[in-house]
Image (cartoon, rainbow, N blue to C red):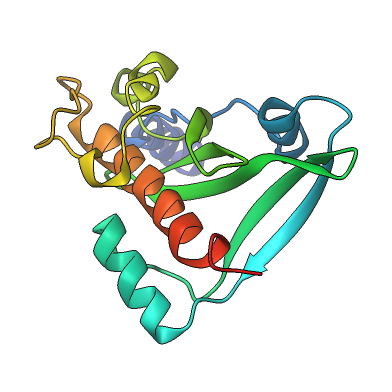
Length: 180
């Protein structure tokens, strides 16, 4: 009887202490590529290894540190013509990650941002319409100080999203534009 009571008590305590799980995955990688380039597009991986001077320029433009010496763009093509570039970026918001699909046109302009996964509470997630305000802004103006509107209650999420967008645009400008 003691064993049963002890197990029941442990079960009840674990239920009281357990933290809620908010993880939400919206799109797979394959679905993300269809969002970025439409169905039927050929998608190639472009692996980039920035040199030390490029890392310095990227970090200066993006105003964030690069966390890896490797970066991957997905290049969408149809009939041999480049449709655009996409990057899948994961950053921690508070303590849990968000994963964004950041899509650039063939000319390197931001055209889409989709949340692929969000593991923080849903009320902290910026909607896609929030990202739409970033589409026509040059890299230098992608900041709250330059007029990007924040979202009350989702400050860390919007900051993480903005950092990811700046990073992708800076990598495109510094490495992709300069590649032959």
